[in-house]
Image 1: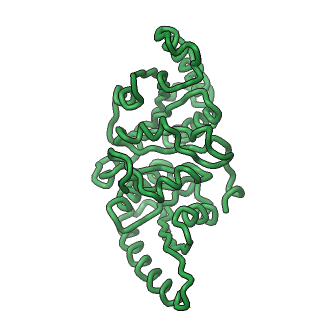
Image 2: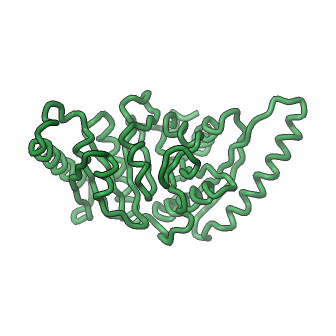
Image 3: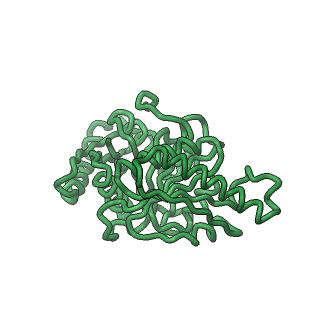
Amino acid sequence: MKVLVGYLATSGGADALALGVRLARTLHADLDLTMVLPASRLPAAPDYERHLADQAEEWLAQARETVPAEIAVASHVFFADSSTDGLITAAGRLEADLIVVGGGGGGLAGSLSLGSVVNELLHSAPLPVAVAPRGLREAPAARVHEVTCAIGQRAGARLLLETAVQFARAAGTPLRLVSLVALDPLFGNLRGDVDAILDHARAHARAVLEEAKAELPQGFPVSATVVDGPTVEEAVAKLDWRDGDLIMVGSSRLGAPRRLFLGSTAAKMLRVLKVPMVVVPRDQLHVTDLP
């Protein structure tokens, strides 16, 4: 498995690197540190790009020195007109399974605030994208300790569940399945009946739990819970979160096939979460689908 870190020599880049190291250690994966530099069409472009590449290689060398010795790490420099397209192209060429970026770039309020590149990735990438909250570089957890999967009933929910199950099994971490009942419009005309909503959610949670158990070794730590609230933020806040936790969410159904699209639910969760978030495309991805 390969984890690609979209690196910058900034605090957000350090957060992304810290999350990349945590994921690589947890999944026994290789780490690819990647910087995407702006391409130039000026007559002196070769000299300009060479100067930028030399500086990037220096930053990457410094970053590699901070990666623990037990993790295989390589670094790469790509030139592209768009940082987003460059990262997606790099992921295809390097056969990465996951892109990791820092979320402390401004935009939304909260520890997972999005810069323009991260925001574009979360609306266009054809493979999972992990976003590191601001300050993760200072967190003591060395690996992922528990995976939470926010599961609903929309298109792509099954692939999200499969991805979460595969991650938890590979990492050997407990899996917590969460149903945010107030957020799922498929409850339809049950919406005005709180008891009916909760009964529906509990039934769905039990079904998903049994499905997950069927794919995991006997006795594997997996649980399901239902949380509700008048807002997404209040519902998510009811869950206990610890250092080393990670949440996985699905891409919105509004996205193009095999492309991410950050839906309103996930965007609202970003405002209050202080743990890394992994957004999973709603369609199956193969390496051959990447540029």
